[in-house]
Image 1 (cartoon, helix red, strand yellow):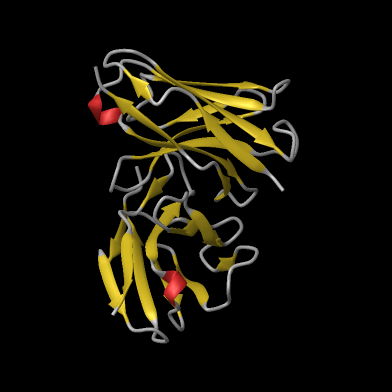
Image 2 (cartoon, rainbow over the protein chains, first blue to last red):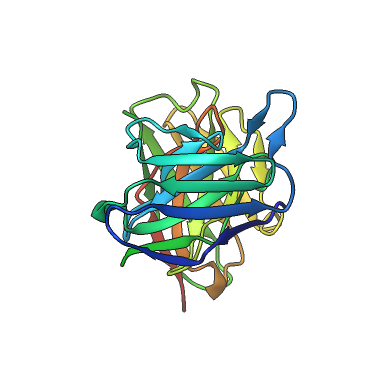
Length: 113
Length: 119
């Protein structure tokens, strides 16, 4: 299985400041034939299912504010929230869908400082 | 707008079989070349992918659960189902059904069904 490791486990950021979450995979999730990274980011608020924010490592899902951005390739990825809003308080997960079983990171809890 | 809704018992006894159904609305389960996944989340913990099924019945299961998991699809009812046998307290979790988008990420999710394993 591909192991996904996120850092940090929790993060407190002031409103309007930048938040950065990292995700590392135990093997590359870059598919050489199409140059796509099979990596997604999800946001989960209490009592709700996860919501996809980013797929292909850097493509924002429909309706996702542009303050959310994804970057990285191969085994190292980053989710950045450029200017934290109160509604961004949530747990964030990365997931690889390069190979089954699909696997998620352990989650990063984002709070307001 | 595609919507998914899980249904099934909220309480299952140890050693019995957990059975859940996901009903898809707003689109046909057999069109669009989508896979349909089950994912679970114990209280306060992270997400675990259980497996997925295609409308043809083709499946992929997580090896950690493969010996106990069976998935099926009923295209006439626009539903897909999960059976997990020989459950223990470790199987207590919120179970989600989700659609795998063409990119592979899960773009639509059900609200989740809490299943508690207890006698």
